[in-house]
Length: 204
Image 1 (tube, rainbow, N blue to C red):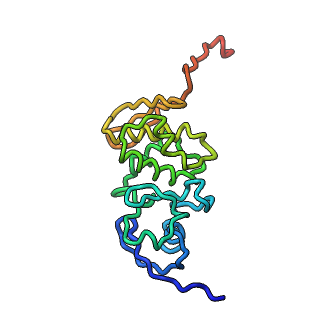
Image 2 (cartoon, rainbow, N blue to C red):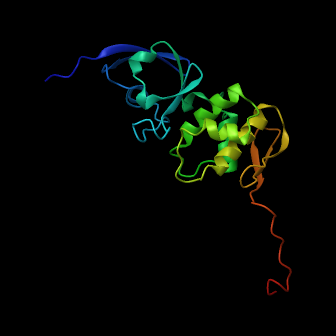
Image 3 (cartoon, rainbow, N blue to C red):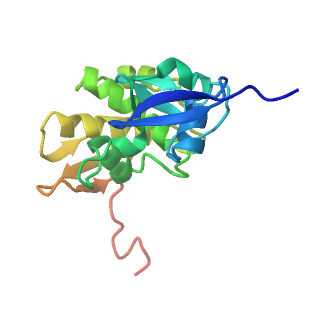
């Protein structure tokens, strides 16, 4: 039995139009990774349960592993590669980097894309709203605490709150946005910060 003939599909990705020859059954994830070589969108479960493949379609998060490429012709697709501007990371990317919101990093692009979509609609989300928004994304490393912290840090940045930003969620990461746009983590702790032992207590 011969394979189905390929079809030409027009995909607008990160502001650029691409004409690609695809199998009719090819998913958007197939097209992004195999044809356009945009490998930031990760292939995880291929069943729509992990969220690693999340991209934005007309600004809304979708699972590219469950979306046929032919169904999104000439619509605006944004991948993790399309977030930065002039070599500068998006505030959400910076926040994940600064707060330790990613560990192995495999799930991070999906979380970032979902978070970007959330903050475009709500620049001051509560912890509950953040957790609801990212509920379709799975992480096996961080326990989600620092991910929520990262989204709140990014939200503060996008609201234009410069200087020190307190993030009272989870571990209580405190971050500072510097004037040059870089991020500095001031510390991470849960509850009362332990006191430093005296010389006698430390055996000195």
